[in-house]
Length: 331
Image (cartoon, rainbow, N blue to C red):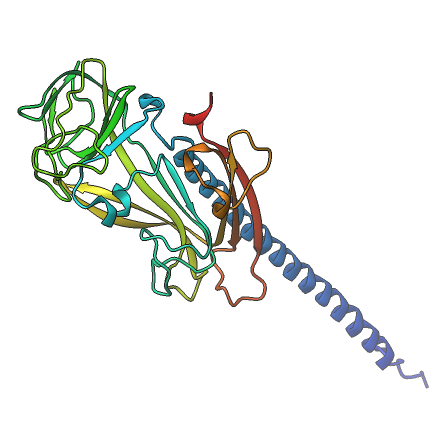
């Protein structure tokens, strides 16, 4: 009788070892996938933060570098003939730049919790600068309030804020009409001019005629831009709840109205220090007594990963610093 064939198979121990090896390989592969996913998410978040910082610093620096009016030189007399300039922050000439610390109230960016309102404890910055290339004055007829430009009016429109200046004085007014070679400064518009005269007086003469002053040939006229930067609430909960904002008056068919723009989301804090001409260290806004002597600005932005809510525990946050020199005040 022949022997029956021997049965073959795997023992329980062999199966357990095979299962253990399989689980180890699966766990390793899963861990590698999760690790790569986390690395990708972190890299993407860091890229977004760096992109926000680069864009924010570039836009802020562009405005800060141009603060003031280089074409007017160091004029000693400045007159503002707009209606009620003290009630409109964007018409109050500040020499080019004015900073506000985290607790300083600023009409251009009031504190609050609503969307678009400034976050308490963050700085704000008001800048006034030339918004166009200077137009050369050919003649000025004070009886008709008409300034003729040479060779032509390149950029000025009715409703624009403008500054006419020479090396003796500068006048801030609103253009009431504009042609191919002329502009006028009559008593009209919004906010409008309180006086037809552009002459200096202390206190300002806001009568209808005012102080007559004629700008001679080779004086200049340029459009004025008045704007403010601040960190505000954006009203969102699914992403970061703060953003960097810019507010500026815009000319709408001859009438100026304020427009607030959300520029960069994820910016949760803005702090600013200032360098005074002749000094070696930056100081806070409270230490600046004469804003016309500021020659440098140090910006510090705190930026969160924009796509994650502020409550997320895994969001990225970076603090970055940038220094800007005021080009118009460099000797």
